[in-house]
Length: 363
Image (cartoon, rainbow, N blue to C red; front, top):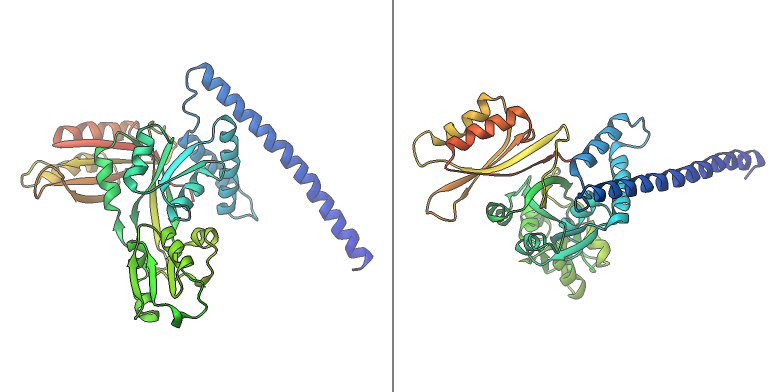
């Protein structure tokens, strides 16, 4: 290496060292400010609400909008989520319940939203995820609600009908499915383990590449990876997190049938989210059993100019051939137009439950 090159590199590296030192100082300054926020909240009796989803969303959106590059917005979001996660943990690490075991897409969604400083609490079922927060053993739940390929997650939808928890956030996760195996040859694989939804998301790929392999549905992709790690002649369909956690090589990457395969997760807690400026409101309603009843239910939203971004029906649990409707609308329930529309809707609906208003996911 020439002297000129060494001198040029030394100058840039010295500049980087100086920037790193300044970053370190500023990060700790930010942490001290976060501690002051916690102290002020405690003085005013708000110590239990250390996490404010609307504030986090506002910060992340502002940073993305003012980011001059060259770092892409996705990297900026990741970095500052981790900074906020670390600062929150100085007050109290947030306990996050999710469908386990470790290595599932639910874990990836929980980490994406709450950062690595959160205390992860894997549960054996979606029912247990709800109960963990309802009982106060966890601060928040992360539950899958819909997939772009396979549609709604029925168990989550049913539990939302009965729970006292509120939706206070959402996270959208791009789903990349991989074939994981200790085998080095596809011809050696006679069984493929995975969650039923993941098997469905890779149905056509399996038909083409492994048509003779037995497909075995298990409770989670992480469990599938555990099975494949222990059993010769087997493979698992799972994500990056499972591959890393269970030390399984990725025999084939990105085998999902749909290239834009995405899952939406809800964040559930015991408190509402305030207005962030770009929000959704989710609700459940039922219509009286008469002609035109659903049209009457939707009319208050249409008249108020409220945009509906999701409408889905599920069988009601208390009567045969009756249905409840799950609706997502744009806007926060405390905004005047939304508030007026919901009040009018309540007069038409046989049943109405507002699940929560929350910030739209920040990617």
